[in-house]
Image (cartoon, rainbow, N blue to C red; front, side):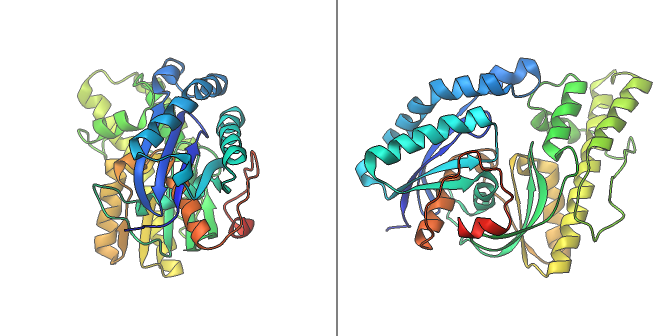
Length: 346
């Protein structure tokens, strides 16, 4: 059965080199070469190193994806690439590769906004689970670079209701993990430790929580509060103390994210909500949103864990839906335009 246009997609916006073959929202194969080991000793992504590793990984990853899907270029309906936002050097590698393939094959090339890709992630299906129809909803997007609430009225029809004024949630996780000597990336480690701790052991601030009608976030002050706590009390001297600190920090992040998302859902009358981006893999956040969904009576759609982080399948799915809708392919290299307004005409 044909699921939709068959797209070869490339994603290289940060520190994952990824290629995928999708057919509509169905994922035939998704291959990701991670650079975590490269950047871990620096406590974060080094842009120059990221670009250099994309250069060496891009072609092998693309070849692996096509071989795994058992397809040739002649079997494709189109190409897709992340056009921004992201690290300029990293984006350049993917865009150049995609342009070369487009010139060689004559296939249409779709430039996809990275955040539109993440909006597709809860709807992806594969051999392990069915695809879900892309439908209007409220999206909570949380990652290392983004924390925002997006009203999704349809393909290309996105309204950003509010975003972070400073650090993104994922960035705060990584910086707190670095402060505590937990390594990079810090989110999964903090999440695991938080499950062992008491979220009420330490009270950390919940910035901008009182005003539920403003859907903006701020996590810089929370990060500073953790730093001040460590300066005053020293590094946790036991696993239990470390778990309590992680649980208290994570609870502060989650309470703000969930409270703002619930308020936005009520205000705009959304019957469904998604959570997307790297932090959508956080078990504490998933559990809190699931409890909110049960309490408030809305549907919660979450990505499979393999599609929470950066991947090319979500980029290909966005391109496939755009091809089905008859939207003209367009690539704006290094475009970091907002996912609002003009995106619908891209």
